[in-house]
Length: 384
Length: 56
Image (tube, rainbow over the protein chains, first blue to last red):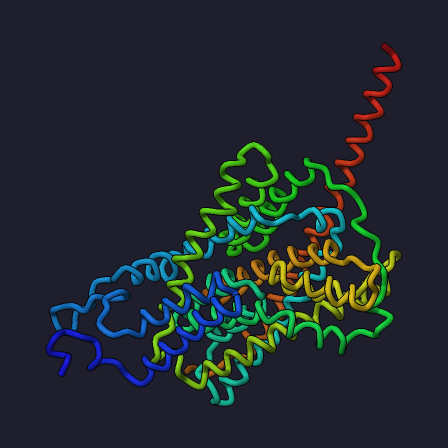
């Protein structure tokens, strides 16, 4: 009856109502539980808006039957900022670079290796997703599997960057899964760390940061990274290049205004638009499928696999290292900056109150960001 | 959904993990080398400065 007035009630499906409730749930969690509020608040609003019919926020329907409609406000950002040119996650990487301190990694470069080991989770989830597709349990091909697996990189913008190019339909689900598990790192990682290490290993005391890092080293590091990584994996250039560019703004000491803008205004503005778009990529017909539950399960497998890979290499480094080495530091290699490093600090200090592992864990944490960006570049090289 | 080419899957998984390990391994070596060279240069510069002061 209300259709006559041009209202959306007539077109509202049961699926839309479920997703609107999910959006409201995200807003509730963001405000009352302070659960990833910078992500879940805009994602929740985006999901609500995407599931309200007839808004034209994504596409204005064409007057001519059969012709595509015109892009709406969010549709323009999704089409040009994500699906076609993938600008938004790359801009986030400039801000992340400007916020990252590579000092602990430069002081102790072998921590890079832990960032590599933690990418094992991506491969495990990739194979798991393909197996589900092979068994006919899900509609996952190579591109979908890669988009789900990259959740294991524990890096929201990297997940969005890969998914928007390989499987744009999955972007809302994979992004929300990645950010949700990143906020659940304090619950996911400690049991895995405890299962894979002995009490004696967890109590291992590590000396505070081994040496001071000079300004010259800090400046050369991002330049060396750009040259080496981009030459080796050119498709990682948008992420690694902008990450290191952002870091160079920070450490150069000559462009403070640009550095502050990247750390503050740029990342905040981009986060608002990006997260609204992620929420808007959660229409009922895409999300309310059994595959969504499988993405959630595979994301968890990827996180757990990455944590296990880092800790196991940490155990190996403990054996070969001359200095005492606490293997739980490896768990920070999954990136999830700085949450994973904080978890390592908490677990380490609980076992041995003398231990202060935060700075040691920040090394593999930063290496994990580079590692997942490289893995993203490799996946795009093969499948993009 | 087309059939999965498991050979390609193996290549992606193997090359993917191998490439990440290789890139981060190279970065480990490059960062270490950069640190050694810069610290040595700094030391030499300081020693040179000390000698100059002694001569003057």
